[in-house]
Image 1 (cartoon, rainbow, N blue to C red):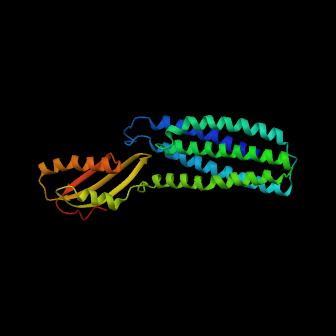
Image 2: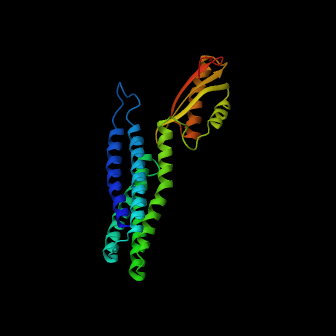
Image 3: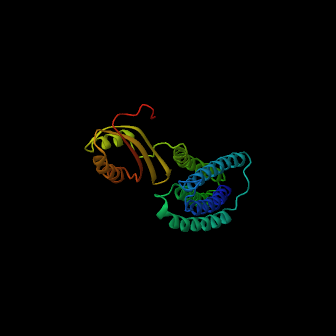
Length: 253
């Protein structure tokens, strides 16, 4: 159980270092070669941290299996002391990361690392107390496996979201059909096609679309801010590129 806790602590350090560096790089200004800037570094960091978590979880399960067949002597007192120290360190880290976990996938990845390790420390503390009072050393293995299994679904969720952003998929919580219906509801809009919605990074969603209208140029200039305001207010989309046309463009995808 302590080995599993230590493995998570190692990935915590790596995850936090990677997260901090990714945030610094992402703040760099756009240039001629990177016109959108460097926001995707945060997603690459989140993806790498998810892979670290997977490796750590598999290592924990493998170690637990080895120890199940050859149980070592367990010093429950030392196990308890180290686990308590680890829990304190993780609680402090969770407090520092909590504010940014909902706005950044990168920070969420680091937060999940620390959260999983904090729960692991709790498991080790419980395991140490049970071993101390019962002498059942297999509890150590059970705690380690439980930590590894608990981490996997949360890691998969993080990895899936990072992959979706890298593949320029539609962000979670946005339904393209609803976006199209809302845009069609703006006076003067008779059709919407070639609608693309993707995210540069967490909370930074982009949208491009062709808007079919029979309105003249002056009316289109009035419709543009109305459409942009609609997309910002209802769908939190602030990066928009809209093309007006009188008939649907056959060449658009």
